[in-house]
Amino acid sequence: MRTPNVSFEFFPPKSLEGSFKLWETLGVLAPLDPQFVSVTYGAGGTTRKLTHEAVSTIDANFGVPVAAHLTCVDATRTETLEIAEQYAKAGINQIVALRGDPPKGADGFSAHPDGFASSVELIEALAKTGKFDIRVGAYPDPHPEAPSPQANVDYLKRKIDAGASSAITQFFFEAETFFRFRDACATAGINAPILPGILPIVDWPRARRFARACGAVIPTWLDDAYSAAIRDGREDLLSTAICTELCSDLIEGGVDDLHFYTLNRPELTRNVCAALGVTSKAALAQVA
Image (cartoon, rainbow, N blue to C red; front, side):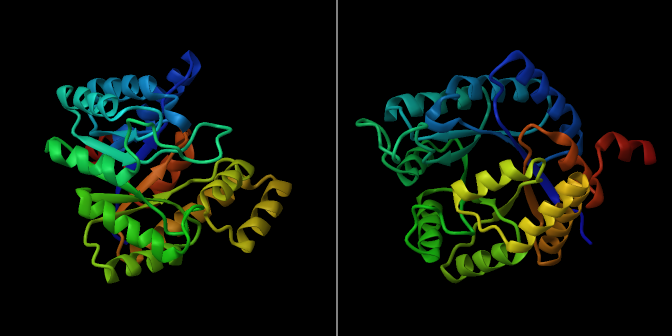
């Protein structure tokens, strides 16, 4: 089996304890030589400043390429592009451009009167600057607001045509879900790389809530497996086995790049990477 390229997603810390956890997570995963790491925005743009601080700290101290999430929520066009310009001046040239989740309690996304109305508008504006490698989101399972699976494909094509260079998918639980989406994208003329997003399950009830919120289909067999594993105290073993098998199936199906949603909990991601042959640079140097 080929050894995949990997990348990791983190969320910005909101407390001193959270900061220690993020730096610990980076200490574990940065030696695996990721292609890049990304830092999220909170719902409603609530962590905008924290995201910028985390991105800047990672870029300065950990020696890995870093991509900053940037959304359309609760900001004017000028404010959003000023944030992007700050990243460019700091030498950060990768952005994950997203519409963004609405604030908690809101019925749905509502554009700022002077802001970007969609991720496509944001991507077009970033592309015009010529300063960024722009990644975008994609949905192998139907987005909760999408009228059909094909609508997800069509909207991704609009984002690629607007100037994005690659896409990162929402997480999913079965490799066939990704393969169907990849084939549909190819049929639609999408040639940009599509990185499958992988969620190592460190907490099944929480992962289940995430899945329901983002539209990821939960297979019956997975629910049954976790019910038994939690009862028997084997949840960690099951999570490692399931995530490793999913990644192996993707690699066997031609996938070269895997993007892990770490939730700032590095252990399971590290263990899965080790099972896939992704080893730290320090360990490789010792072998050599």
